[in-house]
Amino acid sequence: MSRCRRFAQLLPILVASLGAMALPPALRAQPAPVANPDPKGLLGRAHAAYYNLSARGFKQYRFQANPDWAYLLGDLAKTNPAAFSSAMAIFAKVRFDVVVDVNGTAKVSHNNVETPNEQARAGMNQVYDGMDQMLTGFFQTWHPFMLQTPFSSPGRALNLEESGDRIRVRWVEEENVKVDILMDRTYAVTEMKINSPGFDSAIYPAFDRQPGGLVLASYEADYQDKSGGPKIHVKVLIRNRPLQGLVLPSDLDLTAQIGESNTHILVAFTEASLERVPPVGP
Image 1 (cartoon, rainbow, N blue to C red):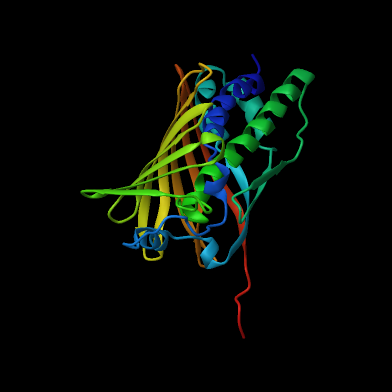
Image 2 (cartoon, rainbow, N blue to C red; image 1 turned 60 degrees about the horizontal axis):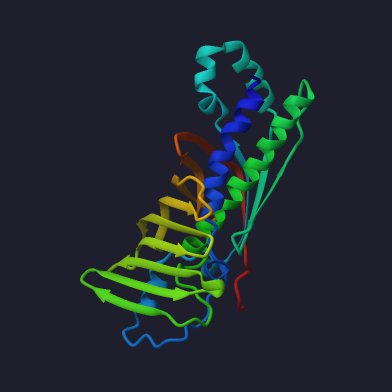
């Protein structure tokens, strides 16, 4: 089996996992006033607790996404060094350029590398598509925690409950999509559950507490398609770095499990640049 074919079989596992965590549109939208009163000001303080790149002038993030092919192909290097060398020669020429806008939409483009035959070309096309879906899925999940805050439900009635050191926020989106968020007394989300007619999903984020607010550092997620597909579990570790005064992701460590199948991939963001909104005023 060619290295391209083997990789093409592995990557969709991770792709499916990250795509499954795409959040409802309202969680990716601009914030709007909620319909119910918040007499204790909980939501206002919760909004203020997050880093919120949009409020800091974020407009566009550009970078090159570089998977660690040698790490991914580590087993092949041990069992078939010649095949490993051939695969690395191909993958070393691949380039993925990514642009992330203020809505969390990631546009992924790539070059087309020469392959030895049509079979390898088909495998590379799956790799291109897989990286596209993986990166767009990651930024859909990253967006509500970093570009806005997780509580941006435009005009919908929210149900707030306090119990001990926990605060729970619930609301219902269109098409009977139910959102349930649990946070601690520092307003850090510890659990976000989404229930819809087609799937159930849950995300368990963790944050770095930086001077500017909560910064997403990692998350685990579970996804279950109600049509009967296998349960998916994802773990994503994020390395953040400052760029032109804003904190942005620079490296991802992604693990996904579907049934008995596992995928682990490392991706570095290089050649990064940031476009910011010009300041208002004289």
